[in-house]
Length: 187
Image (cartoon, rainbow, N blue to C red; front, side, top):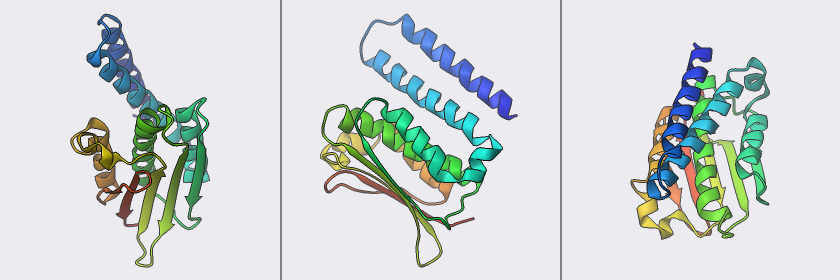
């Protein structure tokens, strides 16, 4: 099943790439390129997550690898604070990684590539009520400064869907950057 999913992601990626090549430059091409980036990142994560050793190592190693890959040559300071007792199921790890991946892609496009910030932080902490809280933060101007981007954007809808998969809801703060938070039950 996992092999079939990986192959299907590659087929979808090839179809989008093929469609984009025949189009004139413009907003539609940019949106297709963004979709390609998202699907390629999901495909890479999918392959890594279904390697038994990845899950056994926990969230931090694959998260660091994913973020360094996303930021490429950009000089971004990445800070991770993953509670050692924060054990995630495979489904939770997948949803958390995909949510963080989407936040990183958005921060790259709207903050880091424009020189408006240089720090990306991720924390997974255990709360006193026994729940876990995922916190993702950048040091840009803040998503709320662009109301259209904060509501109804594809990226925001994707992150909200992954927050629901975790069993929580996405909360945002926009002071000195953008902070995204999801509280959810530990499995």
